[in-house]
Image 1 (cartoon, rainbow, N blue to C red):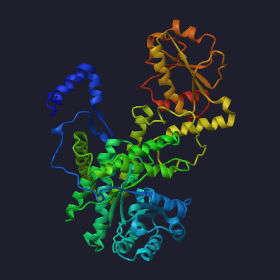
Image 2: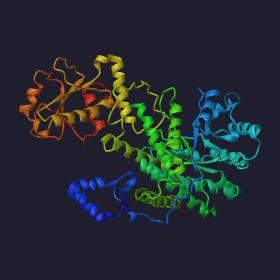
Image 3: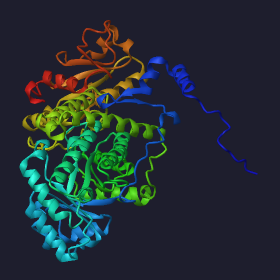
Image 4: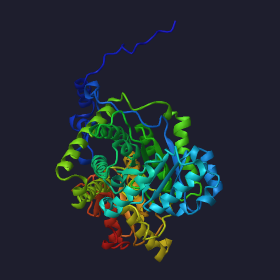
Length: 568
């Protein structure tokens, strides 16, 4: 007979017991560093949570759609056949812009708007009128509720202009009668420009109050207003924090609407995968980030999802769409309401975010609200601080971006295009360095590509191999070719030597024989902790505390490959 287990055979460890064990096994300093840390905007996080950390009174409202709908972006290269193919193979709707609206009859000839979601990005009332007329002709003038209107806007300052207010009033007048979602609360604008999760949510709350009050002042009914609202957000690569963001978003917006007398009402949320986390240094890795970000969105409870592939592959849109298909049909993530519920960590993080953001929201309102914050450039200034914080962590190596500051792809073909910086990117400073290296190679030839030669020092094979790996990942994202030294090869001026071995093996007696016969004018570095007793031939050191961006830049400047002013 098989014994039944009730999972009560072992005593439950308390928080203090868990911490005591961690201290004993790892030491107090290391235990503290891995169990407690500070995220963006001084958000205190911990590795251990139990039921005492969860406030059972704070619940996440249900979403609008039980299963998310995938909206596929359509661009100028798409034909009516490719649009139909998208809708037949996983897309639940289409996302189009101003230019494509002019091709409605040709490209969307076989689209039945009553069976799919239509989303439009525009700031032109005439474009909106054109597509609504097309919808009216296709399905009549009523029951067109699954329609989202995004504003073609990339600047916070433009949200309070007279032109934008007039646009919003006119499209509300048209769309509210048709059941369209035309008041876009685009907090993703903050995230895409480098703002933190807390700042994005604060922006959402104060922006929503501003829009609602403006429409009420125009004599609009609060029920019509709430039915016209939807949220648009961008999802970054911090998996748990982004997941908790969407859950906190639902709680906070429900609280805002309750202040206007709207009970038991959830606003639909549309989530884009973010451009902020994507890099041209490793395009294939962008797909993996898209998957992680899409998972954060659907686990957090998004109602609509769009995955921007950030990849030049011909079939990139199909692969992006199939990420959603895999999450929905193979992973079955659409079959559970709030799958993150019950996790002590996520419940605590959701509550912590909601409370911090609500305080920030009240502070902004006391200082004049959204319009005052925008006119005084409050959000822009805070975004700049958050972006600098994130870039500094990546430059120092404290935060890893695969393919950007670690595990670089030397074979990636980087386009030499100085005008690629149309979007804000966390990897921009690293991309600038790689671009300068590729421009240098293009001008002087592949034989002049900078090289970092790895030189094993001493007899500790384990440490030699470990530091080979570290030094390779330290340099290879930049376009510097990293290879083990070949005694038969002649070293050029655009090369360096990196000594790799145990710290105790960097003395003169060990390093000098290892360097014997090699070009003396070549810069010699060592991978490891700085040692005052080390050989005088070692001019610099790299280790886990070295700023990767500055370290590689200084080496390239010493080689004459890049100039100081060439990198931001």
